[in-house]
Length: 148
View 1 (cartoon, rainbow, N blue to C red):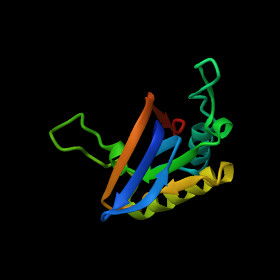
View 2 (cartoon, rainbow, N blue to C red; view 1 turned 180 degrees about the horizontal axis):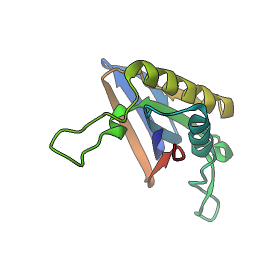
View 3 (cartoon, rainbow, N blue to C red; view 1 turned 90 degrees about the vertical axis):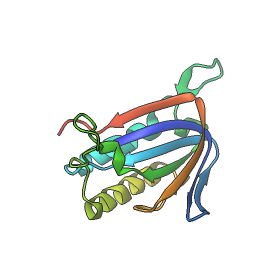
View 4 (cartoon, helix red, strand yellow; view 1 turned 45 degrees about the vertical axis):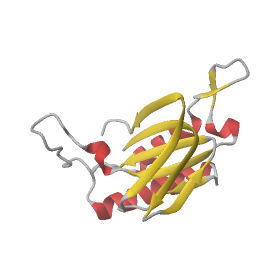
């Protein structure tokens, strides 16, 4: 699993012009599922996302987690995180999980996030989405499940 983590002051996702998920201060998570992802990798990524100390403390140092600040999560599925652009002009998505499996993995990842905090909003899996965000910092990090 790959999760692109962005610290945001606000974020929202629209499908067909309708807002389907919106948060204030917290994390926008763009989530890509690998064909070989397993429960252990999902748990690792979910725990890492909510425990990452990337929010400022009283001295301005990145020392607080999402849970410490009471922030929210907007999780958006994004298979293109597994796009391989090393050869040719068109990305290869061979490493990405096929849609039925990716939906299962993404759904389980969101369940695991909700075990940490109820403040989790989502996009719509497989839909054409428009994502708007105000990146705070900017802070953007990549989390990947451990080697398979």
